[in-house]
Length: 245
Image (cartoon, rainbow, N blue to C red; front, side, top):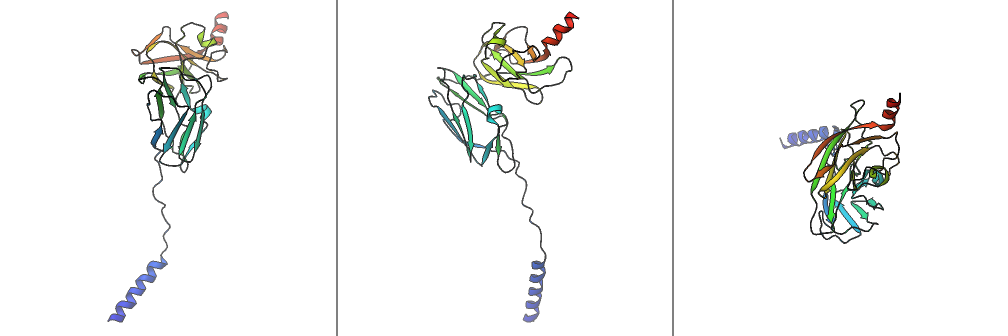
């Protein structure tokens, strides 16, 4: 009887060994990288460093940081952003203003190495003073002629209220449009601003070509009170030509 049980056990073992099942590999990773530590910490006050180091829970890649990362207020010299292994290092080259809140919007620049999952809406803020400015302003931009969206436009806020500032000076803040035409300014200092959306084909944040699209408010906005707006962009050159005809 024992021999019969032994033969049956060997037969089952041989059958199970002969059946080869391909490994499933497990579920696909769909989770973006997660920040585990920042030095200095997020929303640090009395910031005096020239370097920011961000640590993540997995290996990351920094995609096109020059184009995708937004620094506000706009610095005279852009920081250097470098991604390596699980860290991102921001080296500040500009002299920071006193008692000012700075914001770094990473856009869609941070991805994990394996699956390319994007860390969206990640923002790092710090202040050289005693508090963090927390005012915000949001909106959406459409093309006046078609009602469509051009996400290559940027929204800009000027605290210089001269009408010519949009053509002659860099704005205080700027924000890139998302795919739905929306924009968001965060960590703003409350006050009075002029708001524009411009095409900015040469990347100088100025409206210096009449063939470029532009949108603006007829009146100033008050950050801290006003929170949202809809803009309609047009080509000034085309409108001038139509009037002449």
